[in-house]
Length: 429
Image (tube, rainbow, N blue to C red; front, side):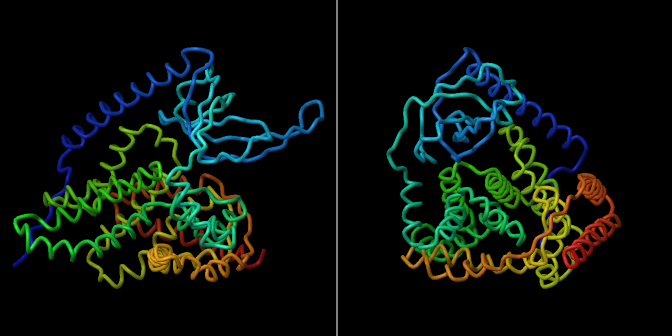
């Protein structure tokens, strides 16, 4: 029996118009609420703010009088959702991830600065030194690893902590920064893992106690609830929020016989999130996450008739090529190890769930030697100042490729030429 063909979410110009109107209404409401919070913050010269310290590091500078000044920089996120920077005494103990109460002088910032993140002088009034659940988990992870760098990697993998700068450089040179920073890729692996462990036990219970329920729907709700709890626990990283929202939208559309692998699904996800969370407009991680899915969908749409094996083998290389200009403009470095990220990304789908299992049974250090070997590769990376116009050119071709398949081949050739040039440059420089 032939299966019914799924329909498009948006079938006419009128549907697009309705979506645009809904987007504008939601965005207006969200911005109005943010503007109200902005006015409350800037209503007086100073304001009391409850916040969490996201980053804390020491900085030294030379003043105009030639004196050396040392102080600490704090990156904070308020309980109201806005992010800002401030400074503190060089003698302030390490209170990273702690909740604090500050008096903040932010009276002169603009609304745009409020949305993007701003600097303001502050005075710490109170520090909550009690250990949170996240800190307790971080301490348990630290006990499992003798090497501080390995501990930092797992803290980033499981708790979305920021890596030390030297580790950021190593992973950037290897082209695998996306594997360490929690993203939609990790959510996909976790979703598959949860589905494997929940599906069969649930079906046994369903067949015995509640055969009238939909196993598919209930399994999705259980997985979605667990992933939502994990996302909230990590304080909603933008790329994770994109992936979770897309997962929910995709399931809703699937149940209603609407195409999931469609740029319309991505458009709906993007507009919904920006309308509800306007700060995402200034999040690089959010747009990188959207870009990766865009190129994945673009390939699947045009080459859906190809075999599963063909897609499995070529899709990783395609996405790598398409994201290469983004990587170069943001990080500005490349090494001969960089293309191996295609292989390491595939292997990571095995490493990630295995590492979680080993930590749960108290053997989290079993894979440390592999990570140490990876860090010792020390690839010779070259600095490449890629003009922004290279990325703009790719974006322009990407938009045209939505409408013309021929442009897709031109886009592939464009990125392939850049890749060949990088290999040549890294080899002979």
